[in-house]
Length: 620
Image (tube, rainbow, N blue to C red; front, side, top):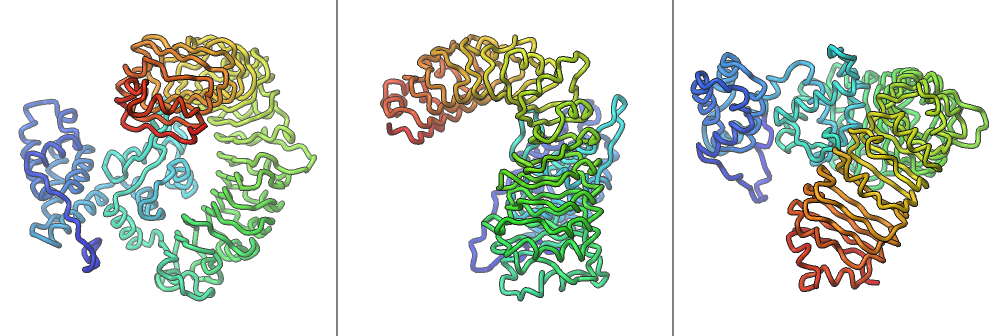
């Protein structure tokens, strides 16, 4: 494999700093979890001997050491370490210059070779994503499920969903240092990830070698004629004609990059488009060829592609094997009746640019749906939908209250995420037996206090909660889920200080008080309150005049935003005691408020320990 061995000779060559022997060993020991995996000092000496020998062959290069450590972190016996050592000897090469870089490459290749069989397709799938891409893991995991890379597992207590298994697989790739975490959510799950450039090069190389997928980059074929799409598809489809997956990286319009007439590639089962800039297609009819010629497709991602509105071609209904369809951020404004033919569909994302999409009354036929994202309005069709039979739904965004019976939700007992703006939602909890035990994320509209209490008690395991609308008085602390880590209150019109209740929530990490959520003029955060809070957002609270923070409150606060709280004269004295605070953003506040916080201002001493303070639109 010749990954990264032939750089442009006119470019500046960056040589990464090399670690000495002790630095290399300390980095490796940390990544390989030597102390925790081998607590018995009687075998520690042999482990250290094996480890130091292998690390020595990495020649001080951090990436090789990190990946090798991640690989050995999964090996818990001396026998397994000795086996890896034997493989290392046969893979690593000593030397200088190119040979040294080849040593890194061989460590990466060894890490792939050592992957368990179930992780290899998940790793190879990462080759779809462009270089330096920040990968949305939720979407990627649903593609893994659609491709059949994972299956549900019984863990001794209950059946682990395919999505949970896929999340676990991703975690294993992270532990092996083959994938880097960019951001985690409030529950600790990986929200976004990326790959090191050299690791991605390995991934793409292996994916090509194994005919797993092909990446077609428009920037490398921008002058190709329309009938030669994509050049690589015609050139690299392999003589077998068994191209399975295709990722197209776009830098302009889509017209030249719509496959058509390639019968020898009729086995294509995944087509993904990636683009950073605006991407257009003359009309949606041009994409019919995909629907006609590639009927084995399981994954079709058209996210962000724009035309001039219009209807998705009816030929979509011929893709009867389709499991994943994303039209997010497209300008599709109507779906054909044939969408109901997609009986195996698991993920349907219709969060388009248009707030209204005409959707025929066929969604009930898609009984294998697991994740359904609907637009704000599903059109003017007056027929009532039946969603009660979609018993596999885990995600339902924008429940169409005008088209469905609210009681349909009661049968959807697999729901983990629900977004609904129907004020009648709380009524279903008047029956004590109604409980959504699996629901983890809920966004709903309230118009009375009792509704809120009934809802949060009927959803006892929530991690994320968004409440929009007047509630006047918060429920008691013990009525909230103990798991609650993210809370957003919008337009609540609370008259009593909410902090004495909210600061007792033991796992709350993100709190947003927005748009008249509090109508009073003073809030107080007490000692030891908000023990886990990381981010606090105070938006559009025009009556708030005073905010007091007692020393010891919000001890782990990292990020603070204040926006359009124009009656607030200053930040609280207690901020100077929050040593964890690293980021502040002040927006749409009076100029005097900004002046007090700037260097030399009378309140600067309260925030001088904060490394990053940004002011935006504070010139009133």
